[in-house]
Length: 293
Image (cartoon, rainbow, N blue to C red):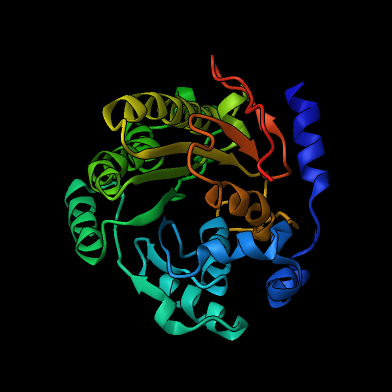
């Protein structure tokens, strides 16, 4: 079933080639990425925080949100890459004042705390924290669970799991105080997979899935007065630093992400959605039974 799902998702999105990168974003006011005009207007004047926003999916989401009228806080280790995200968005028609750059290393707790402090000083009412920063598998050995170092294991887990947890733990009370606690974790089908050569990355994404589900349950109980929506989006492969050989555009993540981010209060909490529209199950979390619209 997983293999069939992967094949379907990898074939379901267009455009397929990197040469058509940004084709949809150039015409955003015509199609709204599948949203109605009224729902598309949800993003105006809201603030979103995206990690790993200097490349790939994080950059694509940042471009969409800025073009939709949102203010986008973008974080990553490399300021020049974050500045490139802004430059590309401006070339697409976004306003430069729609971006706030806050460099951050998600593997460094002090860096995370400082970034959270800066974001909170801007506004408690962050519409959604989008945890996108991730490290791929270390391919220096075909058998990473046998051969990779403890340092590699720790670096992967700090980036793909512990960093998102630190961000969520720090930001959750402040977001809940503003009445809305929304978190979207960018996971991977690797979190459902067992593949030789990808063990450490697969484990990190399975753990991120579990973190998503458990945070959804715990935050709902801890903040009963807030609109708690903690979910995950699972994109397929796309051209990025993590995957330089793909012909798929990172924009493939935008349509489903836009639907998740713009749901009404009392929307999904603790659910998993593929970029091609499938509602997935993980552990005891069943597939979301309603339409996202």
